[in-house]
Length: 166
Length: 147
Image (cartoon, rainbow over all chains, first blue to last red; front, side, top):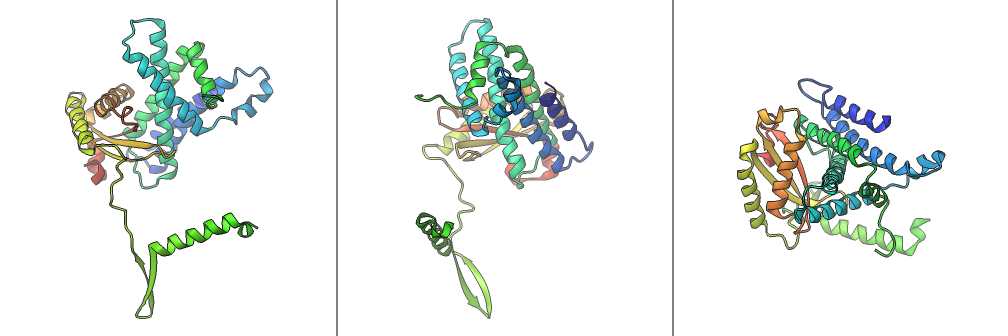
């Protein structure tokens, strides 16, 4: 997955571009790029399930930020409820923790990206930006651990929106 | 074309009336002065059903518990997030030696989890968001909202 990986690498580069006093432009673009790294990772993974390779780019354009936020919020809530039952260690628990990290990071990063792109009254710091980038990095690793699990694949479908009748 | 549509015209007219209700102009000494008759700029947004005092106490409880991991202080405010959902925005100042560590995500998640559990953000229907800065970054920026 070169494109999402490249975006994440670019976010790190931007966040560390100025060694002493980071420019707000660099930090803002780093936040936005980190979010889009995760956005494109998930969209890319979802579209891999589409058999016709030449239509995957078109399918990718059907994903909407707002619906992906709602799906990530719901996913996080479901996993929180599961974790509150204090399940015994098992593969499902590991998968749930990784998926929680992905959904939670996506939810969080999206709001950060919106602030970074549109709210000029917010001053960003390197600590803030590096925290977000590290979370996205961690979400990438979590995703690669669980990408073939049924729960992870169901999450990808949910990113398109809620099915009718729910 | 749009102006000919009754619904658009009505909305535009209402919009103009609202603007006129908020701002009125008077002429003083030959110059036009705009009088702002309403100012909600300093009224804090507190979502319905949220007890601000309970939340403040919960935030301070979490801050005390997180001191051991390098949290210096935590501030918060309410507001809608980008999709308009009720949200609480936490501003967390951490010690410089913590901020300098390479792995910030584990600490960030620990802080976030503690705050969400203490404040019960999900139960209150609040989306929680977190921003972090180091003590020296805040000393340099000197922003009252983080002080």
